[in-house]
Length: 171
Image 1 (cartoon, rainbow, N blue to C red):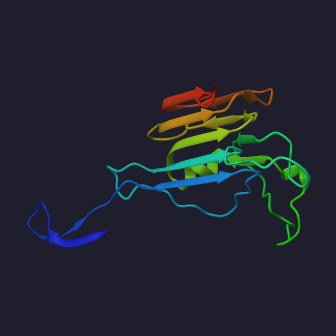
Image 2: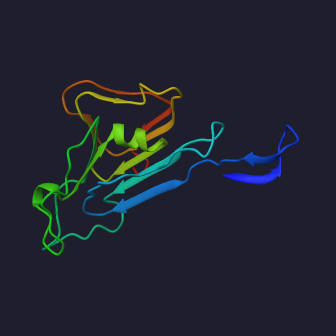
Image 3: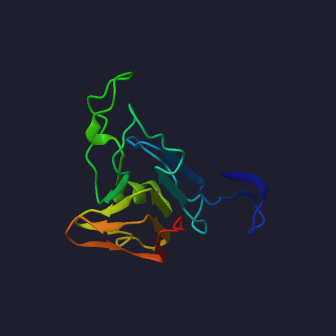
């Protein structure tokens, strides 16, 4: 943003920026994310945005008609389109219930520099995940909060200034 105020050289006009905001998503049954998100900092001295996803901790209803399977947040380098063929008003296929599949490259390209992922049951790091490795500045923070953290059987890497792993809701 350019403000019409005196700048450090005595002229008129100064560019100002701010830290980016926070995008928080909470879902009890599943998440399908597609589209473009912009979370870049407003200037070189500002920080990128915060992305927060909470799956399955907001009063998940049990019983007939509701998904009863595990709630799993899956973090991969990239994710194929998930909403293709879905029709408004028609039930989501059972294979997508209880799932949140996120692409690390898309989150980083959006400008997020802090990620907080929380799942009622599990967070899965998919094969070949390389979160935060190819950045000029490291991610500020990555928090993975779940009773079970797992890999899909291959290598996964996370690079950040702060990495928090735990089950913060455990009794």
